[in-house]
Image 1 (cartoon, rainbow over the protein chains, first blue to last red):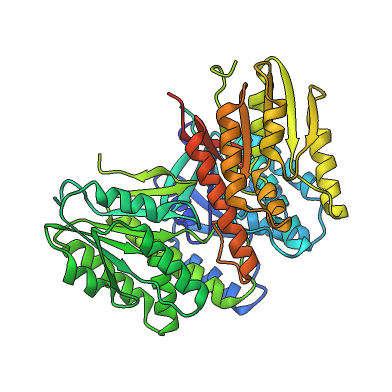
Image 2 (cartoon, rainbow over the protein chains, first blue to last red):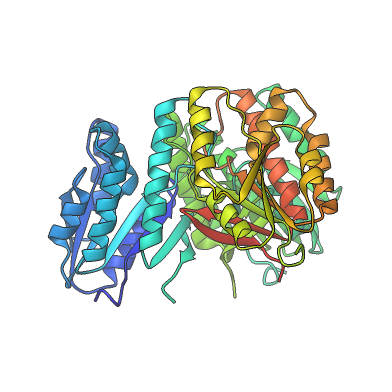
Length: 175
Length: 175
Length: 175
C-alpha cells in the first residue's frame, strides 16, 4: 500500500479545506485509518474546534493524541495496512515551542520517522507566512519554526499540495 | 452567453489584482456589465478606496450597492445579456457578521442564486487565512466565515483562480 | 547570458524558501554574482537575520547594500557577465516609506532599470497580503505599496514563481 499512496503533505491556510482533503485522500484507501491529533484543548474555543473536527470524521478513524511525540507515534502506529494522518504540524510546532523542546531536533526526528514508516503518512500543515510581519517576536519565531518544518517535510514527501477554498494546487508529485 | 463564460471565482490577497482581473474577464464579453458592490463607506479611508475603484472601471459598468442582500441582487440583475460581477464576498461576510445575519443561510442563498442566474456571474473574494492566527476571537470567526464562503462558492462555480501579483493560477477549470 | 536567464520574480511568504531558490537559480549560471541587499540592521534581531543569510550564501557572491537606490544599483552592477539578485523588494518598500520617498516613482524607476539591465536580474519579494486586514493604517498602506510593487514587477519580468515550503509554482514563464 505504501507504493499506492506515498507520503503526502497538505498545506493550506485557515479554512482552506486541508483537513477534509487529507481525510478524503486517506479514506479512498483500504486498511486502518489512524488520526494523529496534535491539538490540545487549552480553552473552550479550542475544545469546541476539536470536537467539531472529530464529529466530522467517519467512524473508520481511530484518534490518537500526539501533541509532542509525533515521530514516536508515527513509528508506533504505522503498519503496511494503516494510513496515518497527522493533523497538524503547525499546532505541533506551537506545542514544541510551549514545551521548550528543540524544534530542529524534533523536525529531524519527524523526517526520520517518515523514512522508516511502514505505510503511507499524510501530513497536514498550516501556511502562516503570507500576512504582514507580526508585531511580537514570539509570533515571528513561530512563523519561522512552522515554515522550516513545512520546508523540511516538503523535501521528504513524494507529493505536496497547497489548498485554496477546498481546491488543491500540486506543488510536487510522484510522477 | 452563459455557456461562453460560466461562473467564475477570483480569489486573491490584498493588492493581488483580483478586481482588475475579474473586470477584464467581464469586459471581453458583449452585453451589459453590472458591478455589485458589497463595500460600505464607514470612514474616509474606505470611501476613498471605493471611489478609486469606481474611477478605475470603464463607463460600460453600472454599479449597484448590495452590502447584504447579494443573492437577491444577483437574481434581480442577471439576464442572458448581462455579466454580473460581485466585489467582494469577503466584505459581504463582514457586513453579514456586523448585521448579525446567519452567514450559513446567506451562503446557501448565494449558491442558489448562482444556480438560477440567467447569465454569467463573476465573484471576487479575498483569501485571508494565510497569516498568523489573529489574536482576537472576532477576527478568527471572520476568517472562518470568509473561508467557508470561499469553499462553498469554489464548489459551485465552473472556474476558479487565485491571483498573485496580478497573475492568475487556475484552481478549477471547465475543461 | 541575458537570453539564457531572463528577469525572474520570486514571490513567497516568510520562510517559503524564496531566497534560497533565487540564489540557486543564479548559481547555476556562470559569471559574477552580485547580491543587492535591501535589509538595514535596525536592531539585533534584524542584524542576526542578515548575518545568517550572508553566511548561507556561497563565497561566489559579492554583497552590496542598496536599501533605497535600487534602480541605480541595478544599473551600476548589471553587466552581460553578471547575475544581479535583489533581496528583497518588500524591505525596499518599507525603507522607501520610512524615508518618505515616493513609492510610485521609485517603482517606475525600478521597472526602467530592468528594461535597461545588461544581464539577468532576479527579484525576491514577500507576499504579505493573504492574512487578516491589519489593524493599523500604516500596515495597510505598506501592504498596498508592497502589493503594487509586486504587480508592476510581475508585469515586466519574463518569469515569475510563488514559493511554498521551498517548492515553486510557476505564475508566468518565458515559454
